[in-house]
Image (cartoon, rainbow, N blue to C red; front, side, top):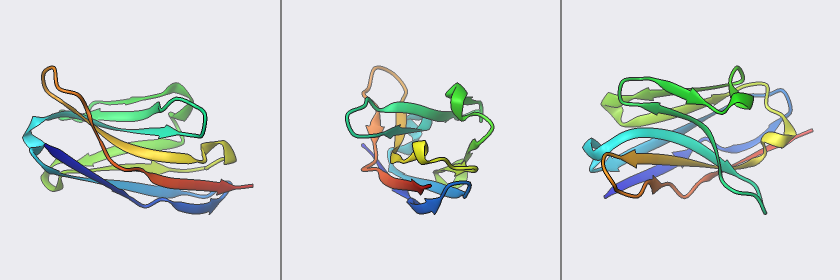
Length: 117
């Protein structure tokens, strides 16, 4: 089992920045890739960005340039730096961990980001 705990969400004005953190614990050696997703009411959870164990990153197109994902393998941490935030970035942000093999992903409980206009 892998446990994921997000932190860093909150209220910020449009144009501001926030940095989300995700701490992984448990069977972290099983993790192949970690990422951030977000979800707003009535919509499907969508990928924001992910990073694999080699440090390769992937961004949903609309987020690249404003958001930066990074990881600290020694601390089992993943971060999401979000700049130039917009009201439409308001969502619950979830940390995700994809294990090796045919194992369902793990999810954190989420952290709320609210961007005011």
